Amino acid sequence: MKAVLFYAPGDIRYEEVPRPQAGPGEVVVQVKAALTCGTDLKTYKRGHPVMIQRAPTVFGHELSGVIAEIGPGVEGFAVGQRVVAANSAPCNRCFYCRQGRLSLCENLEFLNGAYAEYIAVPARIVEQNLLPIPDELPFRHAALVEPFACIVHGIERSKIALGDTVCVIGQGPIGLMFTRLARLKGARVIAVDRVPFRLEKARHFGAEEVVNAAEVADAVEAVRELTSEGRGVDVAIEAVGLPETWEQAIAMTRRGGRVNLFGGCKAGTHIRVDTGRLHYDELEIIGVFHHTPLYVRTALSLIAGGQLDADALITHEMPLERLEEALNLVASGEALKVAIVP
Image 1 (cartoon, rainbow, N blue to C red):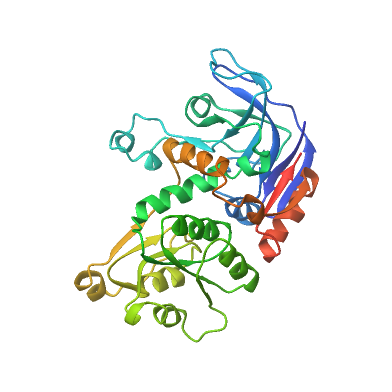
Image 2 (cartoon, one colour):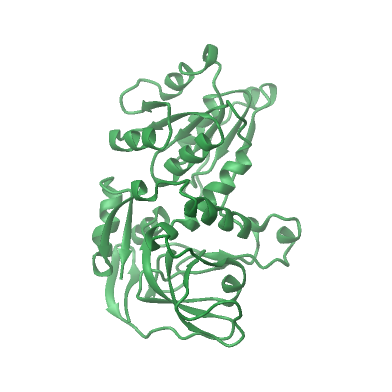
């Protein structure tokens, strides 16, 4: 089969490799759509300590397709069936799984290798996070299930109430999905970004107010001015992954408000927090990571029900051999997500 392999940061190659075979409990999926992702872009630029354990290797993790082969012991699936696979599954046995915190599983099994014509889905993911998709749902839309499941998790942990004012910092694909779900929760959404194109998208996804951080002296004050009596937002969601925007999210939140630091920062970075605000203003600051099988199913239901404008997120479509071009388009800000079609 044809696939794109990661050799080293900045070095990916379109090659022919052996097609995977289905082992016990596994299925092989013929990939019909694989989406670019910020994590894959980071992998391309600098590698990834979890997703890339050895090189060369196939990478990519947002996919949908058709079952091409079923391994021994697999039940409930058939060759030719349209499916979407999440990129991990918990063990359901470790300390965190027993606490009900499945996204913190100590033994998450990951799936990597979507930028290829075929991919073998591990047995644990087949059992928990391989889902049939409706015939009318386009493959490129179904491939959004994995990232959208992370956003569903983030929104639920943010505890947004009807009528809340919510600020979403960063209007890339992740931020736009947060904007959409916050709006569906009945919130008034303020979107912050530095790119006019993304702010236009934010309005399309439900933002009532937008702040171009490149055009204001102080983005925090600009957001506060849009809130009642300038007291700050009820909930701030950071979807960029930079220490400075983490600090902005905290600074723009009202007393008693909630801050969701969703964007992952580079390892080893730190932020400064005013201890007075944290204590006397009773701020609630949380981090949210990944998804769970429940959120994967919820995400598929919302997408299949037309609650997310998938085509507004997927701005380009390219064949597998143009993956490097697609990743560079995302890096330049010219594309949000690109559908890679083998």
